[in-house]
Image (cartoon, rainbow, N blue to C red):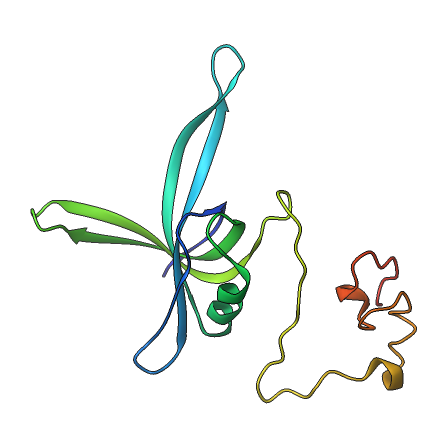
Length: 156
């Protein structure tokens, strides 16, 4: 059983796309988290940096590859894995990996726009003009009040 973890940090390496031998889309990148603390004078100083290897699969990998780049502030939730390995000299090392369930931008440190993707085999979204959703999205745009930035109307 793997532990669930949520980590807030920055993407430290360019996300690398790939695929499994069965053709499933993959994405991996290294992520750094920096911790700050106050020293004895009350000034903020950087303490330690933790490094994580983040791995994503399927639609999450495809969407993250299209949305993220090196340096972006992100929030990652997933399953924590600690993997031991030996280098050429026989020295044991520990790798900290996260199999991501969710990845998103940290909106405390920037802005983002969400774009829904259609799922294969699912019906197309309803036309707002014919489904009665036009009144909900009356502020213009797509007719989807959740996806309309600045919309003050709640779609329920």
